Amino acid sequence: MFELRPFHRNNQDLTYNPFKAMEEFEKRFFEDPFTGFFQSGDIAEFKTDISDQGDSYLLEADLPGFEKKDIELDVSGDVLTISARRHSKHEEQDKKGSYVRLERSYGQYTRQFDISGIDADGIEAKYENGVLKLTMPKKQSVLPESRKLKIE
Image (cartoon, rainbow, N blue to C red; front, side, top):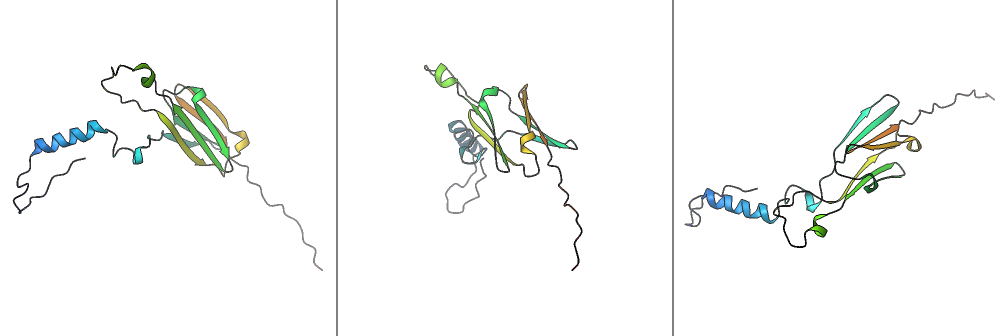
């Protein structure tokens, strides 16, 4: 965020002024509060837990404040993509500029997962109380068939 400036011997900036440093920090923070928190301005990704349930995995993704219609699940090959979009209400409601501070983020959230060990056709999804739950059955191990070879 801010750094202590080194002592310069060339008669420039001979003393450290903590009030000036704090003033610079506040100026940068309130101009663009999320600089440095998210890479390249991206919205933070949502958090997930994945647990092994024996014959399946349970993926739980925290998506509070989303409506079910704004969440999409896509399987392409061995990749599961979970996307959620939060729309900004303040743009429509606040034509007069009455907001003092806006901290709630909006935009597109996306995560991708390797599901090469999953039976993609058997995935089941539920969304309740802001948590997306995916039950993902494991692929059944196919044992190679044994056969006898004829000796000539």
